[in-house]
Image (cartoon, rainbow, N blue to C red):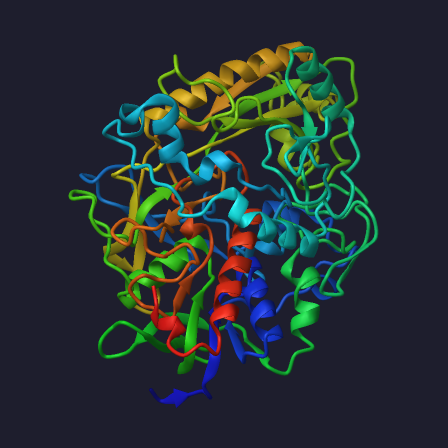
Length: 590
C-alpha cells in the first residue's frame, strides 16, 4: 500500500443507522473507532434547513439527496438463463448520497418485526407441516435469535430515535390500544403517538366496523420535545409533509445526524473519513482474520486502514458486494444451494388500492413520513393459512404522509384527462380527495433468488458490479392477490367513489420500478454456518473479527420497514464486541 493509516481498534464501513449506533457504543467503551463513508458530510442546518427542506422539485422529483444510479448500479435478471443488464435509473436502489445514508431522508416508519418472522421455518412447520415450508421453491430458515432476545435492543433503538407510538402489548398484557399483534414490550414508546389525520379517521372507522384492529403506525418523528439517552434533542413534529426524500429542517425526524452524531463528534477516540470508498477487506494469509480495509479517498489515493475489528455496515447490497470482493464466506450456488454469501435475497411484496372521494377533504399536504393507520390482521401469520396456498401476509395501511403537488399530478381517477382544462378541474378536485391504502407484504426467500458478482459489467474503477437474480415466488404472488382483495373491500367500506388496485407482484420483478427500496438478505444470520454468513451476533463464521450488520442479515423480509430491526441488530452486534473486548482470544471463537 502506498499510504497506511494508524491502526484502529475498529473500522466501520458506512455511517448510517447501523454504523453510527455501533460507533457510538464502541467509542463509549473506550475503543478507538474509525468510520469510513463514501458520502460527503451532510447535516440539516447546512443542507435542509426549514427554508430549503420543502423543495419538492429538488428533493422528490430530482432526488438530490440520493446517490445517483451511476454510484449504485447493479445488474439484474429474473432467471438463471437470462443475461443481466445494468440498472440506469432510480427504482429499487435508492441510497443516500451523503454520510448517514438513507437514514437522513427516510420516511420514518419505526417497526419491530414480530415473533413469527424470526422463526418463519420452524413456525410454519409446526402449524402447517413440513411440506408447506419445503415447497420446492422457497428456502426458509430461522434467524438464530428470537424476538424476546432482541427486545431490549429494539427498546434502546426506539429511545435513541425518539419514536412516537402507543404500545399494544406491555409485558405480555394487551393494552386495548396500539397494535394487539405486536410482541411484548418492556416499556411504552418514548414519545406519544402522532395525531390522527383525516385519511386515518376514515380508515379507522371502516376497519373497526369490519372487525379489524386499526392502530397508529410507530413513527420516528418525535410527537413532543424530546431528549434522547445520548443527550441529543428533538423538536415536536410540525406535520409539514416533507419527510420521505427530504431532510428535516424542524429537527423532528430521527436520523443519525440528529440522534447519534452529536455524541460521536465529542469523542476524541472517534474519527470519520468521508468521501472515501472501501474497495475490500484485507485478510491475513490464512484468510481467517481481517487486517483492516482498503479505501480510495476523494483524491483517488488508495489507503489501507488497519484495524483489529472490521464492521461492514453499508447498505444491504454493498455489504454483500464487499463480502464477495473480499472473499469472506463461500459464494452461494443457486444450483446446489450451497454457500452463504448472496443467499436468500428478498424484497417486499407491495400492492394496494388508490382511492378518490367525492365529498371529503383529505388535506394530504398535512402529514409525516411514517404517519398512518394500519391493521395487522392479515400480516405475517396473524391469520390462519391452512386453507390458503401461501404463507405470510401484509400490513394494510392508510398513509397520511404527504401531498406533493408535482408527484400527485398523475393521481387521478380513471377517465379524468391528463391534460388541458379538464385535467386542471379534475386535479383541483381530486388533489384534496385522494388517498391510498398500501399493502407492505412479506417476502419469502427462494432457492434461485440470490446475489453474486456480475461476470461482465464493472464500475468506473474496474470493480465488478453486483448482480441480482430474483423474481417474485409463486407464494408471494398468491399472497398479494389475496391481500388486494381484502384491501378492495376496505376501500369500498371507506366510501371511496373510485378505486384502482395495483399489485407489483403481478408482473416480473424489476429494479427499475420503485415499488419499495427494502432489499434484504445476502449475508444472512443463523446458527448453522452452512446456511448462514454470520452468527447470532452478526459475526462472520469464516472471518472471526468481521461483523456484517444490516438488512443483509435478514433471512426473510417481514411486512414492515426494516430500519428498526437494523438498528436493534447493530446494537446487539456492538454489545457482543464490547462484552468480548479485553478477553484473550475472545474474537477467535465462533
